Amino acid sequence: RPHRRRRRAQGVFTQTFVQFSNRMISAYRLKQGAANMKKYADVFARADQQFGVQAPVITAFWALETDFGAVQGDFHTLSALVTLSHDCRRPQLFRQQLVPLLELIDRGVLPADVTGAWAGEIGQTQILPSDYLARGVDGDGDGKIDLRNSVPDVIMTTGNKVLSRGWKRDEPWIQEVRVPDEMPWDQTGRTNKLPLTQWAQWGVTNPDGSPLVDKGLQAGLALPMGRKGPAFLTYENFDVYLE
Image: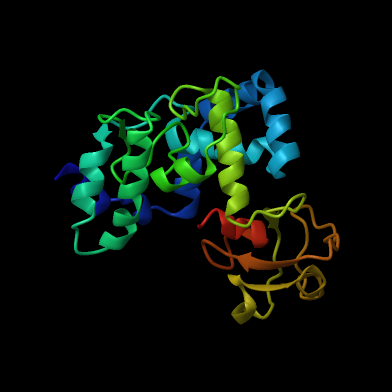
């Protein structure tokens, strides 16, 4: 079946970090993202105030998932989830989405023939049915939650979903840094969270060589291409992206 083949052929995992990031962060997405943040500034402000999730974070999901709603997927969602629920690799993950999807259809929120991504995600930021049901927000006040066509609904719901995954208000998620030629490399890694003062003591600096500013937070040091490649401090909010 197409969605099963798609799941087992995700070629992005064969690309280097630089190759992948250059492809994902296109000139179009940067330009359109800035334009959308300006166009919907009032909605983004509401999302920031209510959920503590800033406009660039929501916009990044919006851009990477569907190019701002342009490519939402044409897989029949119900059929895809039924098939994947009987797949031998991760059936329970998809079975948990069937009842929420049926409830959304029964309530008239979604049509029975709704389409989306191959793994059951729906709408402009690819929300799973369980999140649609539990985290959906009527951002435009029309009494409906339409994550396929209503941008205010998309922005507010995405903010709510990100918050529900453990997002911490007013805290950073990632910071590019420069690493020294020598340091305890065995201490690096996204999950090994240490105080910024410790990283500074080992010679980690801002990209321009200026000292790190102690924010009273802990972060891991991610080296996606090894010690000679790009380096990033990853804060607790970074882990939200992996949920």
